[in-house]
Image: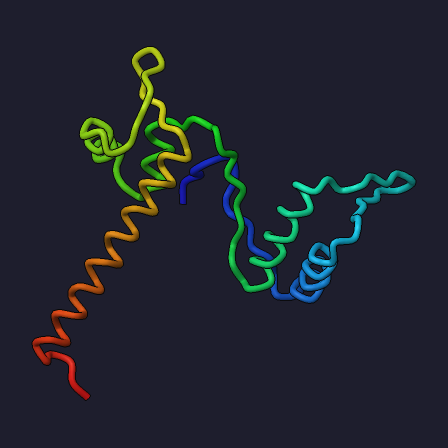
Length: 145
């Protein structure tokens, strides 16, 4: 798998699940959290506590986690990888104005938020098409018990 952004999504080994549950519980408690290293201790800012809580929640459930810095501009190669399409196909999508882009010199740049929005819309369109096919199959009596 090629790197889409700076790092691959992170997965936690099963042996870490108990510790992650504890971290999730602490993050949800509303208490001030601190990070300590040696003699130093720093209070965890609220934004980082929320990220920690969400990350622990997903890792406990066996999901992989990745941070995507919103506001970042992607190359067409990176955007194509996120959408799991070829770069030439992405260029066609951009030229049809389905995803906004900016020109930086002779290169196209795409906002990560726009790529994520397009991916979510595409997923919803696929789900709706499957629901329509399922309804049609039910109406035609193709699947019966």
